[in-house]
Amino acid sequence: MIFPGGAPPRLEGSFCGKCRKQFVPVRMHCSKCRGRTDLVYLDGCGKLITFTTLYVPPEGFMPPLVMGICEIKGGLRVFGEIHDYRLKDSLEIGEAVFVTEKDGKYFLHLERGAAAQPATS
Ligand SMILES: [Zn+2]
Image (cartoon, rainbow, N blue to C red; front, side, top):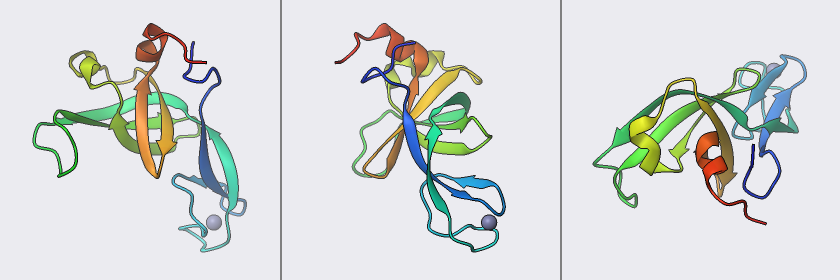
């Protein structure tokens, strides 16, 4: 498996030690007990749970906009834009994806899409 940048993606998240709950995006307080959370780095690899294609996306986005939900290890679900929309017609529920974050936005990448591209160094 080849990842952009050469390393498996890490996602910044939060962890509540009392409830053993993880959160993405990062949040200061646990949604359950309101206690302080700790910053953690989560493995961004997971599987595609569902996706949809928007042909009339919100302003500022180019159609087609493909959005999906990835379930990462530990069961946490992350909603984000599917990076390579050209593969949208062959997306499969359950297929391997990984999540990256940039400027507060989440992107889902297909592992097979990453493997098909030359590695960036
Ligand atoms: Zn908690």
